Amino acid sequence: MSIKQKTVHGLFWNFLDNFSRLGIGFITGIILARLLTPREFGLIGMVTIFIAISQTLIDSGFTQALIRKKECTQADYSTVFFFNLGIGIFVYLLFFFTAGLISNFFEEPQLKQIIPIIGLSIIINALGLIQTTILTKRLDFKLQTKISVISTIISGIIGISMAYMGYGVWSLVFRAVSGSIVGLILLWIWNKWKPSWLFNYQSFREMFSFGSRLLVSGIIDKVYNNIYLLIIGKYFSATELGYYTRANMFQRLPSENITRVIQRVSYPVLSSLQDDGPRLRSGYQKLIKSTMLITFVLMIGMAASAKPMILTLVGEKWLPSVIYLQLLCFAGMFYPLHALNLNILNVKGRSDLFLKLEIFKKALAIPVIAIGIYYGITEMIIGMIVVSFISYFLNSFYSGRFIQYSFSAQLKDILPSFLLATANGIVIYLIGYFFQAPPYVIFITQILVSMIFIVGLAEMFKMKDYLYLKAIVKEKVSRSN
Image 1: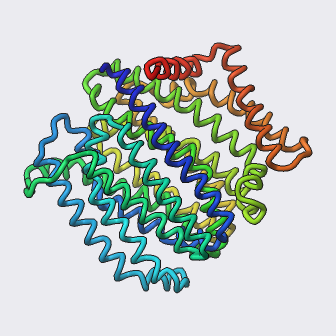
Image 2: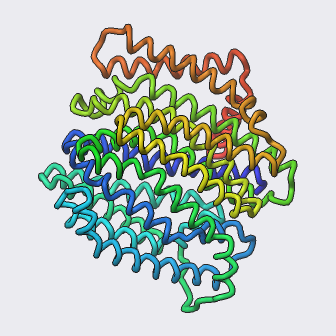
Image 3: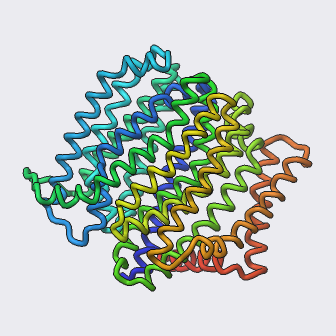
């Protein structure tokens, strides 16, 4: 299979994986949002930052090191497996014994019971990390799709059933833990890999020299992406945090999951081209242009249709989250650009530069946090938008030097997609502003008009990025038939 075929195949199954899993999760979340209160979602949001940092500690950057390494041995996989498991157990125990402190920090006594249970997912995920890494390294996203869809469906059924029976926040807790358990069982049944009882110190040192910097970068990134949950939970309320997390969930559906798809597929593919400069630049350029066409259309469109979407999907009690969603869409639309540019640094083995950039960029969040504490959540998100654009400039400036693809060249390539998406967003917003009808009618109308508008203009002007994506879809469909 050629590099292009591997990329198309990987992208197809990775997109299917993320959007089927998240689509199911999205529907489940909508049902749960109608059954539960914003405060109950806010309680889970309070522990999210600690879970996210824990997952990064378990990985320790070894996943990226294994994927980048051209030939991995059983000793490499087994060494990382036992290291991950040991760190997972240690982190869980730390989590367990500090549950009271976390509960006191947020002044929410119920967290003391929630944390030890939801924290079990740390150990569970540690047991499956190498299995997922092996599947990613060989671009087997089809099996990962199958596993994630099944686990999401089962955990969704458990969460909704518990919510109907009146278990409140515990329905969210057991939804998360059951999803991890089912996913782990299926990974071990279907992937077949088993660890050997060995720990190779030479292999560990080799991967740690690369992965340690990514570990620190990952921790910084997780703290940065989740610190706002901590600030809102501490200085505002669980209810206000619930509104924010609901808005964040909506914007993450297209933004962060497009990022995750592109990052997972592009990293192993681009790594295989690390010694071929022209092909690396060409492949990267196509990824940037096609990815940002999708991202701009979805994110700007969501911001324009935020109010009827919120009213239609989760109801009037979540209306305060509309302004948060609109602003988060503009912050989130840069995420895929961050990921793709940082992937180049990893492909080139510059985890040292990766770390330095992460430290500098995340330091920019300090004044944003101060703004949030003193002025409010809305002003804090505006600050996040500014920081996101500055971060993209820094990422693209340094990665562009390695493949001769500058910040200005990238902007020039993605500008047509941005203009198309902006025009589409204006049309959608005007429909919502002038069209007098029930929210669900407005929302459906906005979706239909948007699809006609985007496809119509892209076809009329023979937009290259659109035609490239169209050709990929046609090729994949013809192969499946």
